[in-house]
Amino acid sequence: MKTDAQVKFSQTNDFQTALRSDMTTATTKPPRAPADLSPAARKLWAKLHDDYVIDDAARLATLHEGLKAYDRAQEAGAILAREGVTVRDRYGTPKSHPAVDIELRARAQFLAAMKALQFKADDTPPPKIGRPPKRI
Image (cartoon, rainbow, N blue to C red):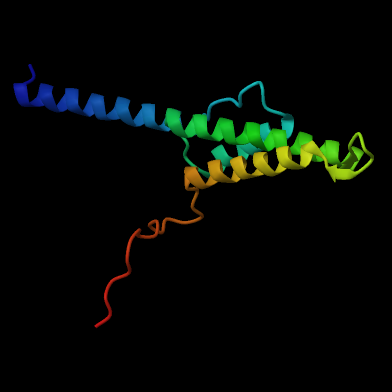
C-alpha cells in the first residue's frame, strides 16, 4: 500500500508528464494557414511557424492580417506591372495609378505587422526604451 507522500509524488509526476507531452505536441504541430491567404503567403506562414514560436491568439491574428496585407501588395504590384504606374485622367494628363497607393499602404501594413511580432534571429533581449544611461 502506498503512503500519502508516494501518492502525491505519483500524481505530481503524472501531471508533469502530461504537461510535458502537451507542450511537445503544441510546439510540433503549427496551426494551418488560413484559407483566404495566397499560396505564397501560406508558404511564408509555414516558414515563420518553423522558425519562430507563434502560439497566442493575438500574434496569430497579427500574422494573419500582415499576410493579408502582403497578398494585397502582391496583387497591386501585379496590376502595376501589367498596366504601368501612371494612367491618364479624363483630360489626358498623366497621374499616379491608384494601385500605387494600395501597394504602398499594404507594404507598410505588412512591415508594421512583422515589426509588431518582434521576430528575433537570436535570443538577445529587445532594446531598452528611454534615455541611455548617464556616462560617468
